[in-house]
Figure 1 (cartoon, rainbow, N blue to C red):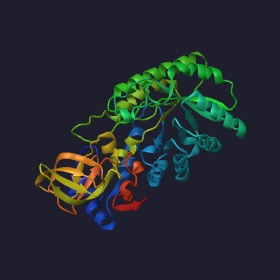
Figure 2 (cartoon, rainbow, N blue to C red):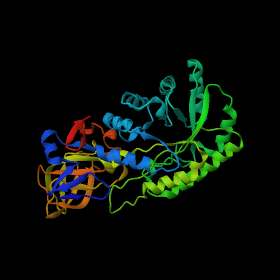
Figure 3 (cartoon, rainbow, N blue to C red):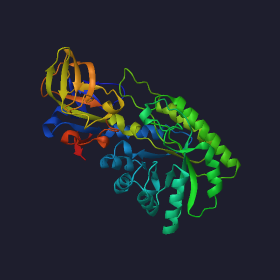
Figure 4 (spheres, rainbow, N blue to C red):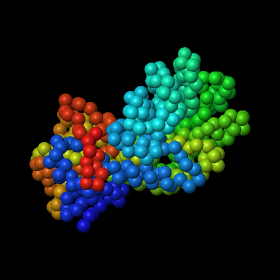
Length: 407
């Protein structure tokens, strides 16, 4: 009999107290590959994409996967086959997306620091649009287009001065953040460049942050965006698309995180924008891939301290930096579930005191060479890894049914 480990990961469960992803037992994977190893559930990724797409009733959005969340080529291929576009923030992500099946006319190039080389490459490729984050960037785009003899679609990313109530290091919609153009300047930019033959300002964009757990910040930002669009329409400016960014949070720890349903999020989008009859662009990253991933790790040893027991595993902050960087809490489960529980500090091998995954954590009693998994590591995990302490990078595998395939 299968037992789900939690309600949000549909493809990770115990069978006879042995943990499996989809239909593949994880203890078998550890026999084939050196730990630590990232594992992604293909079915979970597909489920998340289809759930988001099918939640829309009054419009058909273009879902552009935020590649920064995880640039694994096989994940990009899976989403491309489902019809996804891509939201990219570098020339590397742009090339990776095109190489792995994303249509150029479904690619949006975002980011505050695009270089002239990156802009030139995007213009030559004639991608869907470049979301500019300043008038200075717009001028650079125009200069490049003049030299190339090209015209490109441009979106203006507004900064709505909305606090997303998320971690301060992943907030992007306040005036103190480096992102976007203050909304008070948008109309003037439309006026100034309305007759420019090298750029067509065809879209308005907003993205207020990541791992947002409440609908209220979205409500505030969408309301401001709607009012801006109405104002532009009154002045006879035409836009073809409305880019509402991403930022939907996921559940990392069932005891702490509460997230709105995706249907409520979609309902809010349609409330504010469906009557415009314009293309809606979404840029989810974490929502699509975050819950799909785990890190499979082996216990190096149990170290008995004066007041606590340290469970030292072979995955460290070089493999997965979110707990150290954002103080994030990820659920951890043993691959073989036992009845006796014991309290540990679960730590990695890196020579930093911040290399800690859990403190005072109760889990099945474990011993050397036993296996554990760190959950919800599909986003901002492998893509942020390093070789710190000159440790090897973790391999990445995708699991679908009983099959596994490597990156």
